[in-house]
Image (cartoon, rainbow, N blue to C red; front, side, top):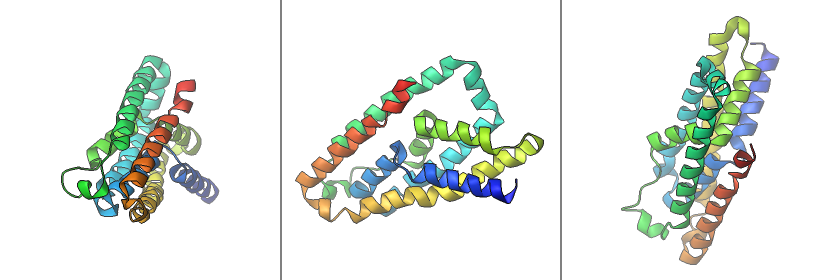
Amino acid sequence: MSPEVLSALVAYSFATSITPGPNNLMLLASGVNFGFRRTIPHMLGVGLGFAFMLLCVGAGLGALIKQYPIIHQGLKVAGVGYLLYLAWKIANSGPIEEKNGSAVPITFLQAAAFQWVNPKAWFMGITAMAVYTQPTNYAFTVGLVALVFALVNLPSVSLWCAMGTAMRQFLSDPQKLRIFNVTMALLLIASLWPMLKT
């Protein structure tokens, strides 16, 4: 891969990783509700789960989904259902002090599994594999795309969690937190719109 193509890949991975989407909205909410440290497994699940998904797409899963659209439809239905469930959980979160004990943030495995039903992740993954891999050195470039995304994605999603963590003090008032959580839930539902149009 030439330096120019690698630079373009880094720019693409940064732009798609830092912009709002289901993962980043959930990490913002988790940062507010649970703090940075307790959200680390969620962040790692997003970054490493997406890198693993990229390897699978590069290994042929993307082509299989194009050949059998029913798989895509199944993922879409599962994604809608899971996002609605997560939106409901966020909207009904209790006060911050209640979360320091019994409530738990999204786990590493839950976050990694979510990538498989996340519409933005599928768009990013299929586009990256179509644009940035090279037929003459395919396996290497598939691995390189996954590595670049893993290295760029984690700091990007961490910023969203850090923003949420910085808002914890302001949102310690239960009324403000309730408004924030309902707003995040509605934004998460709104993030479904691009997926529902296709």
